[in-house]
Image 1 (tube, helix red, strand yellow):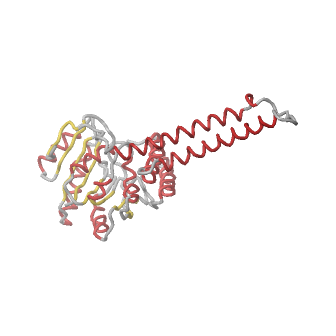
Image 2: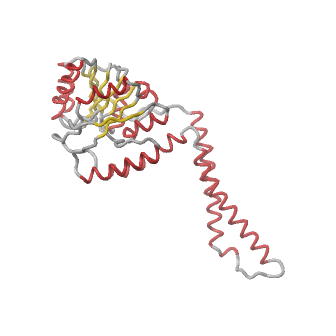
Image 3: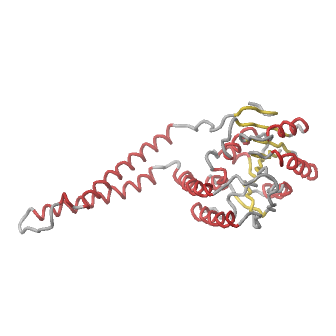
Length: 318
């Protein structure tokens, strides 16, 4: 069975038509599916629309958050509630075309674990398209996973992927990267990107700033999550070594200026190198200590609790 997970935030105008399109695709292609709408603290009639659809269609299930917790939390709640062996996520604003789902399932059947959408022709303004392309190149370069559109809302993956990755913050855009780091086979598929008809974009300039910070987080998680000392300790050793070299140089200078013949090089205590060396030595020691603490946390702590709170459910077991 396919679980279609749709996070929604103030999307009351589009849910009924989106449900109709999904129903048409599933009926035509004979796809057994469930549709999970996650209302991420909407202030309009989104939850009323979800309840109406659930009353008419037993395949529809709904989760409502008490407030807006973000897309990653909504997807995480949907994945936990999903009963299918395959999962598909899409946005609720009708820009993602449900008619693309069968092609995604064919890729999965061919042996892929994660299929990521690629909006080659985007129906978005240039001030969103250009930064997105720069960001995608940056993600591909830093993570080693070459995809054209890491942040495409249309993705399909196996349940095993959902069971092994944890989403929080803004990490939903890095699902393919997180899966690739764990050895899953990831590919991409060109999809039809439709113009926006309802609502407005939930993303602004802050999205790109957060995206860069999240990229650094993902790079750390995928490369050093189980060995944080390798990165913290390496940086700490560099600063510690610079501090030792600086202080050793000053010690040699002090000896030379206090032994005949006298080298008039000035008092050591007034040299900026002394302060830089001490600061570098302390910083290096702190980073090494943080690395040890991080190793202890990784070794002895489990997964953190969920970062959202559910107010209501429909056709979903607690």
